Length: 134
Length: 134
DNA sequence: GTTAGTGCAAATGATTTGCAAACAG
DNA sequence: CTGTTTGCAAATCATTTGCACTAAC
Image 1 (cartoon, rainbow over the protein chains, first blue to last red):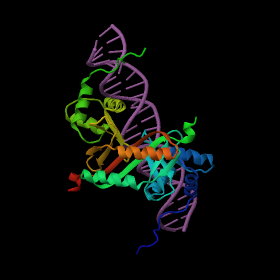
Image 2 (cartoon, chains in turn red, green, purple, cyan):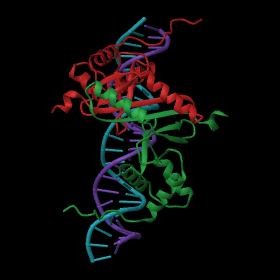
Image 3 (tube, each protein chain N blue to C red):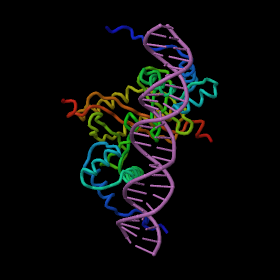
Image 4 (tube, chains in turn red, brown, cyan, green):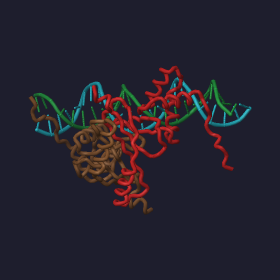
């Protein structure tokens, strides 16, 4: 039997978290997400935020990157497809950028050195237009 | 006054650390470096390893990347110039790969979206030849 | 009812910091 | 000597885990 996978219940906390991620277009840390949920009067425990953000990341519903200090940042993305980010190092705002060109380049470089089972991570940091204007 | 900055003394610990990093061609965590120094009978405190690896990274003497779990990894690189790494996710072995092609691509993408003051990080993970052979 | 999901408090683990002793120049 | 560097122990801090409790279905 394959069945429709009997795992995952609809909870108030999950709805609030999903709603928040839908509204934001910046990368946020679990702590920041937790703080924002409070501002919205949605009472969700920090532990739950951590657990669900990770689950969402595993499922590919949100992307995760690491700040320079190692803290994990999450963001809901428009595309399921593989892509990268242009992240404002000042406000966290980010834009998704895809690139077959880049994919090709990394695969070629890897093969050239005998590496297989390739995967890669690229994040571009900079100042967004709004932040550089000040 | 600007002066030639009178900071940095030659210590036994620093020599041992530099020597170790010279001998290794893999990315290592501070903890691993500390353990390896012990094996070499070089007695260096963990705190000192942390402080010096960071200093070396700031000075550009070693490169630092982050493992998936957020732990910092360091490696001494051959080139001072900007480059990226092909890292074996099994043994840590890595190869340096440079690319003006990639630089150009990221700058173009950034400009297209109004971002300035660009910097970027790219790490390619895979299985090196030796590890895939087993 | 059953069982997944929640949240608090405590545990973890890497990294940092205070501070007194040790050492380079 | 004099200021830098070291290293231990204690402090941080994001993240994880144990466990009793609550809520979905």
